[in-house]
Length: 333
Image (cartoon, rainbow, N blue to C red; front, top):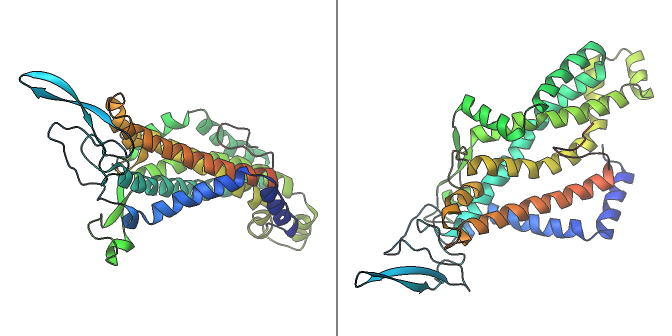
């Protein structure tokens, strides 16, 4: 577990480095916006509204070009922003700011729950493999190698095809309490995508847990417990697991950002199961980039800020706790 010395390292690194402070502020802001989305949203994110010619409102402080037909001729016109839509509207007239808030909910939920599934699957797998070693370790690690042989996105697409689309509706407490009238009564969670990202990323936790178990299994306190008649299950649960948590926590923080990117990629390709997703918003706006750039750009900025802030905090944890750990694509032991 985290000792007083490790806690002291965390505090010292945080005070010394500006980047984790920035990451914490940005991530806290995103979390608060996602949590209070029904209260902060100015419009129902699913409500559509059109110009006569289908033109979208631009964000405040900008203008957009459109056209109108006069005497059979097409003439350019300048579209002014609307004070009712701070970040403009998308191609079907939905409020971009409101959809940005609800999209943050989806990305953070999938990122957190998907990483949780990966931890639950990967850590026991890796601990058993590293603790027992020998043929058990060889067989289990070959399974992990097979998983690593496939690119994450390709494997995720294949698994989505196998499981099909499943969306779980999570009741919104703010709407239920009457604090956000006119907002969606529930938050759609793409269940299949959440499960799939866990199935795709568990192997990284297995590799880290295996390395920790291999180092811990020969420690004196483990040998003493074994000599006192403790079973392997008891040793794994009471001695190996607690002393393996620090690198797992570091890796989990870093992997949340990777899972958000993976979820956004799947949403962009149309496999999310919900339209309230940053990746879906980018996909919807790609055809209008030259005229209505904000439809794709604003949710893209949301993804960038979320991923960078999480990575900044993950780097802080890694530098303070275990500098040898890397996320997906790195050299997790």
